[in-house]
Length: 259
Ligand code: CAA
Image (cartoon, rainbow, N blue to C red):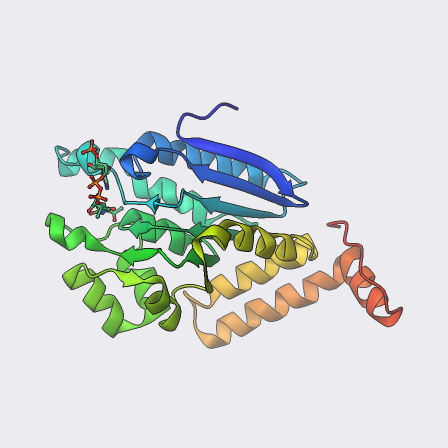
């Protein structure tokens, strides 16, 4: 499939596929067309057996500077309701395979929200995270008030959402928003390597483990523990569980097949 606003590179490393947002002049502003393509691309990689982990990136200057303000500025509430773009974003949240964001430069508004839809975030030293919608007379609409608050807590989320202040990569690391900060020339490589590490694990275990961690955000501890336990037991139906445990006993590396 040919994309206008993305570059999709399947299997850049074993099991790892890369999706680059490619609207550089607009700092990868997330216009509707780009997001439609992104949802499609992620869905098709989610269904690709040879892809076990997906990395989403932008370029050195911008991961994404938010939803497209120019495209949005004249919309009425009914237009917004009819387009209902954030329901499409939910499709990304439903990706079964692990998603890693490789962020450099601006990750603002919808860009920060897109990074937070991913399961892990690797940032370059130049990355800046922010929810500046308040300066536009609006507020975050794609999870910024919810995922950010869960990730960094009320005080920092309130400051970011109510003042629009950006966090540097180091600050984002210190408040637990991201996993790692590396020099600019290494952020993509680092994310891909982390992707390869993830991709070398048993795919069904990855899927059920991801599901269980995400469950922690919207359930009680009791229900979450029950969910976790059922997923754990279910994995004993897989060949990869036998392979993983046999490999441990036989002191060799496992060869996971995804069954
Ligand atoms: N939408 C549309 N176009 C954007 C954009 C956006 N979010 N961000 C940047 N651009 C465009 C600029 O208009 C400019 O285009 P022109 O050359 O045609 O004028 C081009 O990208 C380069 O941007 P700047 O000249 O502004 O670059 P800069 O380095 O001086 O500033 C910046 C960079 C601080 C990121 C600044 O562009 C900026 O503040 N962008 C908007 C950030 C923002 O408010 N994001 C939130 C959007 S709303 C949202 O995301 C809602 C939601 O919850 C989903």
